[in-house]
Amino acid sequence: MVTGMTDASTRPLPKGCQIGCLAAVALIAIFLAWAWVVRGSSSDAGGVAVSVCEGFVKKGLKAPASARFSGEHASEDAGVWTVRGSVDSQNAFGALIRNSFSCSVRPRGDADETWDLVSMSGLEN
Image (spheres, rainbow, N blue to C red):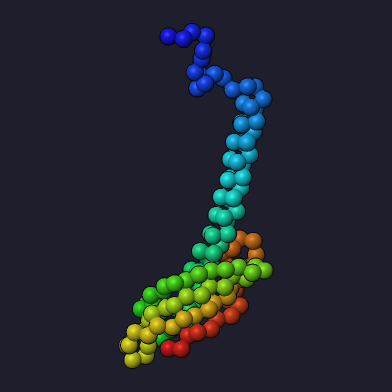
């Protein structure tokens, strides 16, 4: 047995390293929290835009209750959200038809509770 030697895992870190490591961990935590808040607010608005556009698309269908949406993607540019996707719904004869659509909406005011339709295209049934 050798005496006078210590295991590296039991030695305390130098004081400067402890403070630097804690500062780095705190900065990383602050950045991750900020990124989560920013991403959360954007994706929440995008999810609302998708729901709003689904409502506008349904109003343009012959059989809105038969609507099944798929492949929807929302993007934002200068406060206007554009949602693109597909909808399967029955036409006037009861046949199931797939339409691709594009719907642009803008939130009215800061509350994001009321949205205005900017444009919509792609519905043919």
